Amino acid sequence: MTAQDRFPRALLSEPKEVRLAYFRSKIVAHPRLKEVHQTLMNAIRQPTGVLLILVLGPTGVGKTTLRLGIEKQLREELSPELEQDLGRVPVVGVEAVASESGTFNWKDYYSRVLIALDEPLLRSKIDYGTRGLRRNGAGQLVVGHDVAAVQLRRTLELSLCNRRPAAVIVDEAQHLKKVSGSRRMLDQMDTLKSLASTSGIVHVLVGTYELLGLANLSAQLSRRSIEIHFPRYRVDSREEVMAFKRVLLTFQRHLPLPEEPDLVGRYEYFYERCVGCVGILKKWLDTSLAFALDEGHESLASADLERHAEPTRKLLRMAWELKEGEEAMQDRGDGRMELRSLLGLEPQTSNSDWTDELKPRTPDATGRKRAAGRVGQRRPVRDPVGEGQDEH
Image (cartoon, rainbow, N blue to C red; front, top):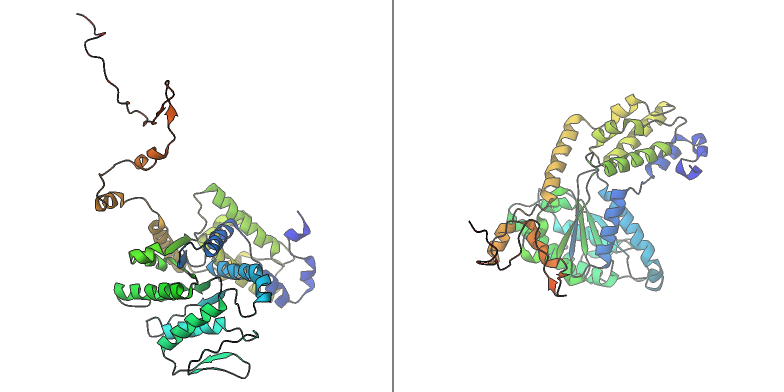
């Protein structure tokens, strides 16, 4: 074990605010996070006609950490190009805010994306030419109350075309569902798809399992969208249990306390109280550490942890929601018979029918290729008639 595997011991002589800030900034690049991060980066780099990317998973799994990591990598990768093109923005990250009225506020959304696009330090400014858009004394974009949503939409399209971000990433995207009626929800998604199409910028929607089904509201949406699942860790997989333990061990070794607590030894307790989601675990440890530092404790005591754990009633709600979401994400092929019927194909009863035709053929004794048959199924041959039969 190297010194980098633990927190710097010099931290123990620092004020508690410094020690807490150190741990709060600690991010563990655990297997789940790295896998989804790479999948999302590949989808952004090579969209292949995809306009909308939906990243969905349970609350507290670490989706915001994922978004911030993606934004950081895109900034780093595009840094050389940005030095030559001062008007370009590498990525736009915004949060879809829940409206008090119960319906999603598109004017507010357009305003937030415009402001995120308009970096005040850029030398190259865009003259939007829209009444109601102005700059304050610091050069920051200000959106007036009298600007109509349709004006903001056109201005945003222009801005996206000029700034050319690699992606627009929308966190808490489940708030888009704040509408009434399935037709309205289709309108919501069509609006985003149209914005992505006219600007040529892929939009990434990051949210909970409430996003499930949004990509399938129409055939057109389904064709231009993909879903990426960010799941929790599960205890029915030995590999995932080991990965969860390694996450606990990393946090354990970086808690800036005189005495290292034994988190790994109680991994089932921690798993239960975070329902397998690293984001919930990290927030819980942050709060518990802050309390322990305020109280002058040498380590994390059980009482410190229990005091700041999520109530069981909330954890039960989370567990039910993630169970339903995971089941909905599974493609069991239940609709295969219906699909074949709609396409005019004959019904088939075995999944092997999908793969048998792709199996390589093996040569027979004559050197000709013959198709591989199924196990237990006799090959079609001509039976001899009237020869070799027993005589009685």
